[in-house]
Length: 180
Ligand code: IMP
Ligand code: MG
Image (cartoon, rainbow, N blue to C red; front, top):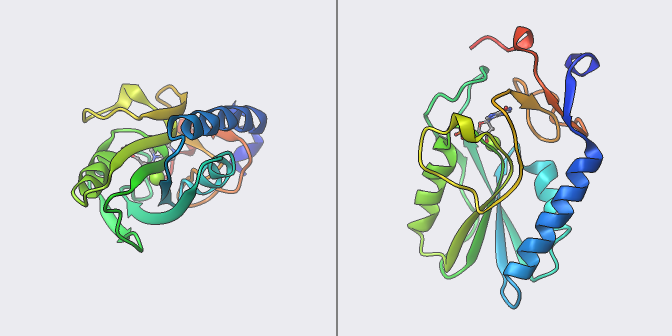
């Protein structure tokens, strides 16, 4: 079990508090408006669920599934769409909800794709951001935590599809990295 000796980077309580704050900020920023929250599966699941329960304005939900990683811990740079949105986003306020921004490749692809569908507005809300790893020019509009250049897991984030169910966010020891 990786979690037995892995170091906790962000605890369950810290996550809860910060997400509450960001949820309140989004609700205030969009007062009088309705927002469609687009979750990017699968990493967003717990963040999406906790964030949307802090939203006090009218809102709807939709999801996309994207794959940009194999079993390794570095981005392949290739983005593959596994599931598209169910409905049109034309004329809607869209907030993309993502687990983490690393190189920025995934979100820059997604933002371009969704912007071409004529939404009223489009913003990015990420749980984690690793700004030092950025390869493209992309800034989140809402970010809960900026983190150092470490591979992290738990609270939706996986190591080779495992550990998404952990309540805290952990740092993966490089000796435990899965093979590329
Ligand atoms: P990007 O396209 O390089 O920005 O990568 C974004 C995607 O890579 C995220 O949505 C995650 O699924 C995955 N990813 C990046 N860094 C990590 C990490 O530290 N742990 C787990 N997944 C990660
Ligand atoms: Mg992801």
